[in-house]
Length: 377
Image 1: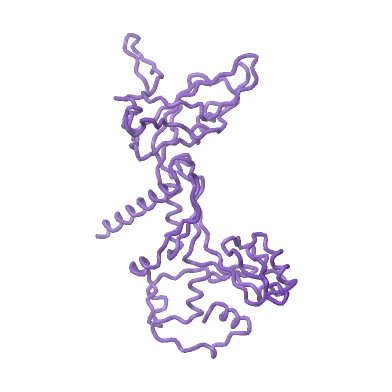
Image 2 (image 1 turned 60 degrees about the horizontal axis):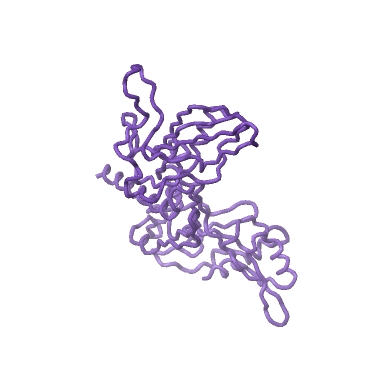
């Protein structure tokens, strides 16, 4: 039985005597539909729960648990749009819990490089030192974090775990206000240039890092200098004001601080399904098209000079439910969400391309599963 026939049966009135006999080991069509679709009504959605449990339909002889072989057969990823900062793709044949696991890993567990320590030599701007350091920490760095190691409390900052950036901006007297942008942060491949204060005046001054070699001598950075995202305002200086500082970036994860999160946002939604339960023609067709603000519906020629509504782009549906409000429209249009089909969107901050971020998230989730299996065995 098709979904249109099922909706028509619900519209006319449901009776248990109309149900056909179902062989043992199979689920009736209406239960299969409840498990696969969320029905969106004007007031609230129904059938929102998912059942991935072997005993859910044990009395019918159906094992509803998650199995690896069916998952391999049904799981698909379809890339819809991709550019340097954003990717939209469909994840099909997956449970909401797994999709949410990818989202959480992307936000909080894929590492990046971010400014952690700021050594301020001079700051006569109106921005306090701690606010300035916080603003610098949130500037994304365009560098591959996989090329660096984590810096622990007992480690010495070196070329393998630290990036040093320098900022020196000044607004001279008689000049208009100067806006300091993020691109004025300059990479110091040889490490820190600020000398530590020494208790022994005759001793050789040391800096805040201990680089054994220059970072730009490494093949990973040859012809690819480390930089920041451009056109981010750091501060505004008035005449006579100056900022001179050194910023040290280290590797970290978003669950420690949001500045290490590699994504501006990562989110998903269930794929929308719009079903017309009736032939909507004439003025009703034009009214339905006007009711939808997302352009889901269009009008086609039905012959004999008649106009008829058709579903042009169900993907654009935002579930505003305007199309099923008032005048019995609920009996003419049905809105669903497909429970195992997710529209996933990743917006990168710029450190890594979005497709690389998703690949790294898969590796991290795989490592988590392997740790669980190891502990259980």
